[in-house]
Length: 278
Image 1 (cartoon, rainbow, N blue to C red):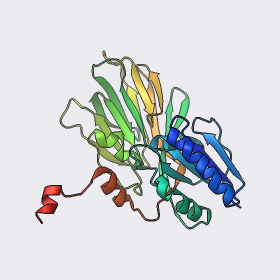
Image 2 (image 1 turned 60 degrees about the vertical axis):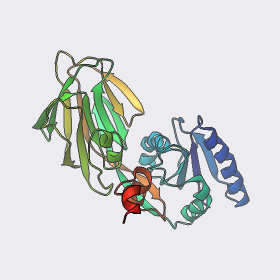
Image 3 (image 1 turned 180 degrees about the vertical axis):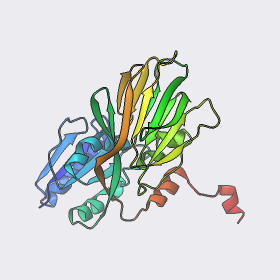
Image 4 (image 1 turned 90 degrees about the vertical axis):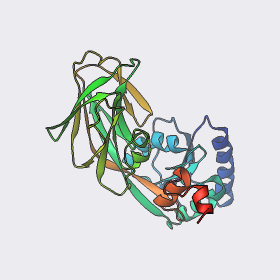
């Protein structure tokens, strides 16, 4: 008998409705050790498998709490994109059955340890340092392993994992990176210098960003996975390195990473006109 944890997004009616169906399915399959909690629960109990009902945001919200417990996560997509939450509701029950039987593949996804002003944060996708209420550019001084990398001037900076390479980093012009690669992606946001472009660094790097005492460095925000946002002041230092924790993600047995890229982003697909004229 497996201990099952179900985490659902309480503000999504479809997730709440699906939870009811899931509970009925567990009952009919005599799976009694099931705990259901909303995604904003502060503490999650130990379990053998965690099932999330929501979208990618639900997984991001759960990741920092579930990764230290080492519980594998199966994401059921009730959201818009569903890049991390690979499983659709119509195929949920057969996949859950395989997961309980241990007949699924589990990928480990690298996470970030972020420290600033004596506080620590855990992120699956990215750490973003950006201008807040001001529309003026900010200046960020970045070092890698105590060596100067660049002085970034623009709207901010994104430091992401390979998992996060398809999120904000991609929108800012960063590359798509296979989640199996041990790297960081550093992507400037709207840089004011043509030479400042995204760079890929080893995940063994310690990336330290200092908010310099620049005239427009005011109301700066640090954002963790887009879920937690904090104001930081001029002179603040943000350290980012690879976390000892990894998210264990149960992947869909019938979908590869590249299948999902094509399905969700139309990546590498010919246009309808070119396909018709082949």
